[in-house]
Length: 315
Image: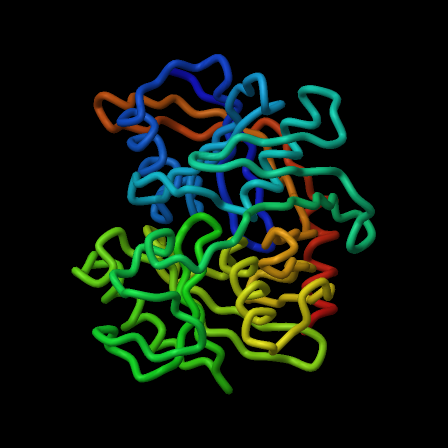
């Protein structure tokens, strides 16, 4: 079957994005499509596959996200901005309530964070520190504490956005240590059987720098839900203020996040780019696991260049 998609990215987190509202593939077939399209050794590549899905009585439209390994994530906040942008363009809306796998989020168009950078604000949550939500088999919430059974002596904070995150605030980031811990979690140990995203976070004068090992992906330049979880964890541990606009940098770029205190709802808003780089089509045979030749129909160099100027200014 022929599939059209948009290659997009949010803060450097890149994806093929498909309008799937009229498509009837099974979950297994979508998992195969994700493995084919998001394969970094293939013609497209990405940190996962995004699907714009139909809404319902409570939602204007929805989003699904499949990781490159075919597993489905509860959410992807960088991908949500891109999916919301496509939803806005196809429905004519400027704000919407978006259905996610296990929760809901709101999205709206907002003022650009830089010239030429299409910007969307999303609000997701509530964030939770309940061990059952985070998926860690411990008796009480993990807040800036060492976790028995985890192969690390660092203090972590466990946050569900609703996908699970373990956040450690560090003076500097050791990527080998992060990858080793991420690989351990990725194996689905008894302590964290459903796996978890792991982030090392450096507190900066005007914000945070986040480096994440993403569940089902590996070390990634950007993870939107990790940035949201880091903003919430920073508020929870007193490193940043709840209700404070926090600039969060990563290898892919930046976003602006604002976390509410638990007693105020524990929602986290993120304002950042939703950049479309090209429109393309490809023949896909999910049953055979085969990908045909990529046909790029339209490139969007102005958007790509606007984002590159913003990132260059952060260096």
